[in-house]
Amino acid sequence: MPLRGAKVTDINGMVGICTGLTQHESEAEIEVGNMRLLLPRSMIEADAEDFKVPMAFADLEEADLSESLVLPVTEEEVDITKRSVDTGRGIDVKPKVTTREELVEVPVTSDELVIERISIGTLLDHDQEYGIREDNGAIVIPVIEEVIVVEKRRRLVEEVRVVRRSVHRLHHETVTLKKHDVEINRFDDNEVNGGTKR
Image 1 (cartoon, rainbow, N blue to C red):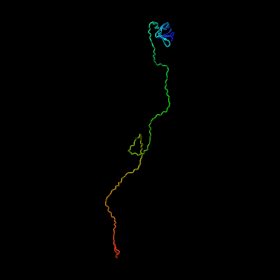
Image 2 (image 1 turned 135 degrees about the vertical axis):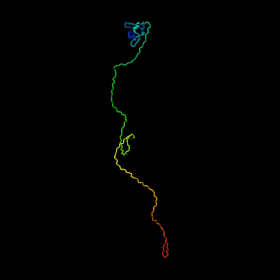
Image 3 (image 1 turned 90 degrees about the vertical axis):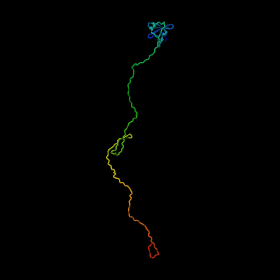
Image 4 (image 1 turned 180 degrees about the vertical axis):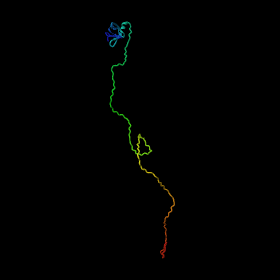
């Protein structure tokens, strides 16, 4: 970018115009208002859009530029900070409740009482206790009623005991006994006078 006719700004923001350069372009003539400054070309730095001088034009007017001039070398740094700014924009959050029906299956456990009546019909003695009891996890509640019982029973009056035993005694009795005997008679057929046979 050519320096002739360009804007030159000092550190205070005062703007001047480069009206010309010397023969060897070692110096530039800067016109600032009613002031005319002859500045070394090395003092003028090119900026993005124009040129700038690291000193104030008022100080350069009083300075003896023929002598050595100590120029401060500066560098701009960006300091980034952030802060909250109310932009006037935002969102309005309103809770909205919607309902819907859904069929779910949830396993649940409940206890049920199953009542079972069992007919017994047993007669109890007067001194027999028959209360509530538990049988295999079931609570058994007896239902008792008083009834009139007419009954006929056999009564044992006595016992007759029969014992067999042997008795020894003398028995007298008259009996008829038969005895066979042989009577022998002899006879002779030659005898005239018959006789008894033996």
